[in-house]
Figure 1 (tube, rainbow, N blue to C red):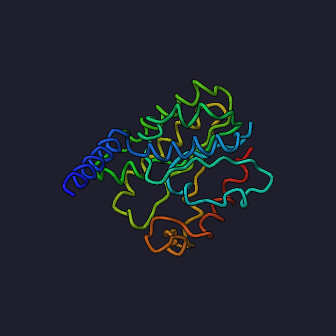
Figure 2 (cartoon, one colour):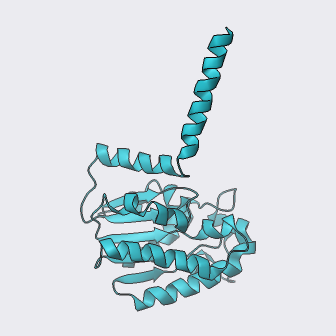
Figure 3 (spheres, rainbow, N blue to C red):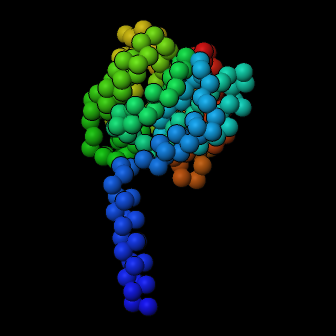
Length: 218
């Protein structure tokens, strides 16, 4: 009995060590690879990259009928993660457009993080995209002002402003501002667009995003 228990403990310990060797979100990337093996990614698609606002938009194709969309958002991801896994996120695809929603979690991870750091992280990822896809359309969706993260709004607003300025100078690039459409008539964030955690959005929130995004969709 003791021998069996020892073997179980050793196997458990080995499994824990094996898991620890993998970086955060490694499993998400493996899941994407499996999806790509099961269904060859369509060429000239619209590739969504980013965090949970995309991950939870499971029915995104229903919002954009006639568009071929590949959703590769993984919840909790930061721009540092997009940079780390850039090869895995870009190499398998031949999109005509890439749309990014990421940066919110960078601030959530470190409340003292300066906007410039997040902007630089985005510029790094943008450069990686351009190295592989020099001429396709690349769009960045502004960081939303989630009520649960109100303490981070000042840095987020500054980052949005600077990324918008950067994208304006780039060719085949746009900054898609979804912040205004999420406000009420008094300019306050509509909390009814969020689920209970005041972080993730309701279907109505995504409908409003769709209205703003539609003119940018290739």
